Image: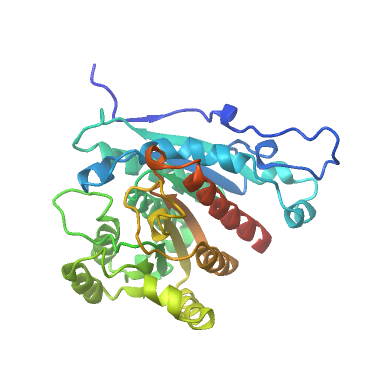
Length: 343
C-alpha cells in the first residue's frame, strides 16, 4: 500500500499543559486551561507540519517540527485580565485546536506532497472561517502562505453573497518577511507562494494587493525586485523599519489596509534578527525589531479585517533555549488578544 503523503490527526491535548496555581484566585488562568479540541471556537489553531517547500527552495529543513512546540510555549502563557473581563464566563469559547496537517515526504524531495498538504490545510482554514472563527496557522515552512490564501479564497467564493466574482471583496496580503517570496520556479516552494497567489488572482480577474514588511536588499535578487515592481508590491524595507518614524510607517500600513476589504496576515519569523530568533529556516543578519512587529500586528488586527493569519519558518533544529518558539508564542498571543478584544 502506498504511504499517504498527508495525514489528519485528532487534536493532541497533552501538549496543552502548564503550571498549576492552587493558592491563587481563579484569575490566575493560562491558555492551556482554555484550549480544547476545535468545535467552533472564536480562534482555531491549525498546524502545517511541512517543510517540503523549504527543501525544494534549498533552505535548511526542520520547520515541520515547530507547530506542537509553539503550542507548548503558548499554552503556558497567561490569559490577560482584559480578556477575562471581556469574556467573563465565556472563556471556553475562545480557543480551539484543530491539530496539524502532516506532510509525509520521507525527508526527501517528493512530488505533490507539498501541494496535497496545502490543499488539506486550506480546507481546515476554510472550515474555520465558515464557522465564524479566525484560523491561525502554525508553520512549518512559508509554503503555508499559499494554503492560507486558498482557504480564504475558497470561503469567499462559496459565500452566498459573493457568487459573482465581480463582487468579491478585495483581498489584501501583509507579509512580515526578509524575502519577497515571489520566485519563479517549475514547482511550488517556500519561495514562491506570493507569486502563485498573484497568478491565481490574475486568472480570476482580481487585483494583487501585497505589502511586504522587512524586506532586505541583501536577501533578494534584482530579478525579484523587478518582479515586485511589475506586480505592484508595496515594500517597506528592513532599513525603513529602523530609520523611519513609526508614524510614517503606520500611515503606510493604514493606507494599505483602507484600500482592501479583507486581510491575510502572515509572519515569516526570519524577518527578525537571528540574535532574537535563531531557530528559523533562513536566519537574518539584520532583521526588524520585535517591538515594531508586535506594534504593527496589533494595528492590523485592530482593523477587524484580518480573516486568516499564520506564523511560519520556526525551525526548532536550530533554536537555542526555545528562544524562537517563545517569540512566536508571544506574537501568537498578540494576534489572539487583539482579535478577541476587537470583536
